[in-house]
Structures are given as C-alpha cells and as structure tokens.
Length: 248
Ligand code: ATP
Image (cartoon, rainbow, N blue to C red; front, top):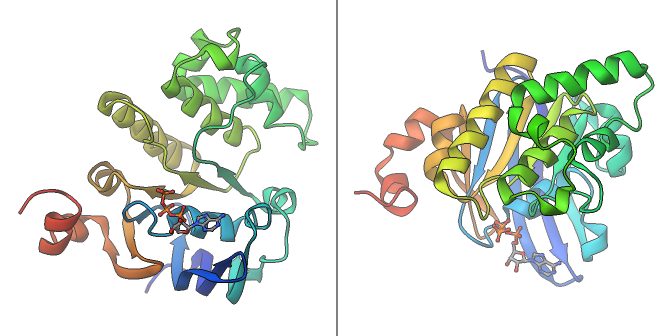
C-alpha cells in the first residue's frame, strides 16, 4: 500500500575528481505530493544527492558511477537540468542564487522563461507567488542584491515556482537565516505543498525544523542512508533525539 514514488533514487554512487567516493549507494523514494527531508550533518552528502538527481555534478567534476535515478518511472540521469525542468523537476540551490542586479520581480519572471502557455498564465502565477510570499510583493521593485537573506531565499523558491514545477529540490533553505525566518520559510513550503500540490525533496541540516514540516525523512551519514521513516517516528527516535535534535 505504499504510494508509488514519483522520484526514485536507486543505489547511487558518486565520485568526485575520479577518486573521492562521496555517495556510497544512496536510495530514496519521494512520493508525489509529499515533503521528504534529506537530513544529516555537514558533508554527509545531501547536496551531492540533490545535484546527482538534477545532473549538476559535472561542473564540480563529480559523476554518478553506479545506480540510477528515475522520475515517473522513466530514467532521467542523462537529462540535463533544463530538460529536467521540462519534466517538472527544478532545483533551488544552496546559497540562493538570485540575479543580484535584477529586481525581485524580474528574478521571478526569469523562472517562467521556458513556458509557452502565454502571458496570462504567467501573470496569474506571479500573483500566486505573491500570495504565498507577500514579502516579495512588497519588495518586487527592489534590486535582489539589496534584499535580505530571507527575501533572497524566498525569491529563489518563488522563481522556481514560476516554472510550474511538479517537484522542487530545495537545498538547505534554512542556511544563514534567523530561526524566525527559517520557521516562516518552512511554513510557506508547507502551504505551497498543500495549496499547489508541489512535491518537495529538501536537504536540511536543521533536523528539528525539517522533521516538523516534512512527512518523511532520510538521514545520511558519510554518504549512506543510516535511517529513514515517517517524520513523526524519527522525531521520537532516541538516536535521532540524541544525535540530531540535541535532546536526550
Ligand atoms: P553541506 O550541508 O555542507 O552542503 P552536504 O551533506 O550537502 O553538506 P555535500 O556537499 O554533498 O554534503 O558533500 C559531501 C562530501 O563531498 C564532503 O566530504 C565534501 O567535502 C565532498 N565534496 C563536495 N563537493 C566536492 C567536490 N566538488 N570535489 C570534491 N569533493 C567534494
């Protein structure tokens, strides 16, 4: 009775620079319509896993040397990031990556550049994004480089939404943000998930917040999944509490 996975990662191995084995056989299943969290400390391999899925490893001299990635049952590991966007999968990279010299609204519009469904639909989606991120509407005319870290993170997620994705791969949304903002961003992710049915796979070091908002979690350590389960169960697991939640 397990829901069929929309995105499936099967036993992938990733090597950097031909010698550094970083992922040692990682498997994940991301069900449609869910929020799945990829957890683990610094260097555990979360970013590498997301980049392996969206084929962004080449520029880092990394390659998938074993295993496969499939989306809606089709192998996708040979698609480039743009082709993957057409399949409905988009990655929001760590560190936000807004175009600093464009305004917030121009940044959002760049997310829609491959769409062919007309200006009306794009305009409607811009309103949809502003609905989820009222803060971006206030700042729409500001140059992105002059907005706060939280606003840039919102802008990056909003831009991804403008491509009308089915799935968003979100890398470390909490990075560098004050706790209150982290909470806000996760609240918005949750409402986008519920309101638009967007599937999320998010990499996050902040286990506490991720497990409160995700439905399911995978914990990575040194390139291996060491534990996985429904978020509510992981939150109650004594090892997770001790090693990842800082309580015992
Ligand atoms: P972080 O939260 O710091 O991004 P992470 O769990 O996402 O951590 P990765 O960034 O995937 O971890 O890194 C996993 C391991 O791979 C680390 O040991 C890192 O040093 C190594 N690594 C990452 N990128 C490269 C690269 N381009 N070349 C060589 N090694 C790399």
